Every structure is written in C-alpha cells, then in structure tokens.
Length: 133
Image 1 (tube, helix red, strand yellow):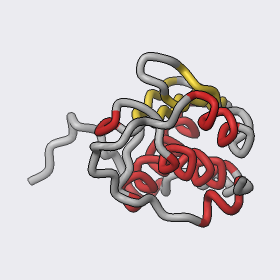
Image 2 (cartoon, rainbow, N blue to C red):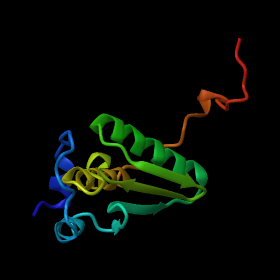
Image 3 (cartoon, helix red, strand yellow):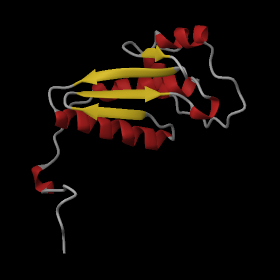
Image 4 (tube, rainbow, N blue to C red):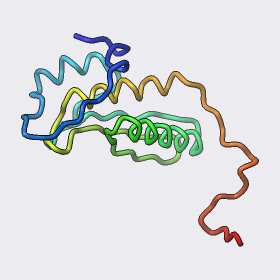
C-alpha cells in the first residue's frame, strides 16, 4: 500500500464512470494513509475538519484547497467558517470512493505543512459592495 507521500505524488486519473465504487474494506486500507480523515456513509466519502485560529486562516486554506482541486480536476465539497474548514471528497460519477479521493486527501494534507501567508494589505477592499469606476 502507498504511503501518504506516495499518494500525494500521484495525479488524479479521470474517472469516466461505469466502474463500481471502492468497497469499504478497500477504502479502509487506503484510509490509514491519510490520518485524520474519516469515511462517512451515503454515499461513502472522505471527510476531514481542519481547525484554525480565525476566519481568515480558514478561508485562506479553503481557497488553497479549491486551487488544488482545480489543478487536479477532482473537486471537493468545502465548507468553512470561523476557525474551521471541512473538506469532503467522493467521486460523483461512481457515487462513492475511488483512489483519486485518497490522492486528493493526501495532497490536502500537504497544504497543512505550508505556512499560512495572510492576504496582502495592498489588495485593498475587495468586498462585493465596493463599486469601481
């Protein structure tokens, strides 16, 4: 079985559907490679809640996860608020888990190893109520 670092080094392969989702026994063998994640039912999916010291750090992390998902072509459900960000993966086309979900979980873990860098103050107010022009 691959380690977390080996999983993170892989790229997601497009899943075109028509294959069964990973069974629970196989999913649990992969789960040990992504500590902190859990399998939730109906459909089977991987989920982890990350904790932060404020809203901005949680938002920054959610954005980094979103960028990673876009780059890999395998998208998460991301829910964040003050001090937390919940990331959930499953393969929609097969209505369950695929190796890609575990690859993405391992890649998200790597994001936690990177230091938090606050948004530059020079960006100014980018709220949706600001009118330019």
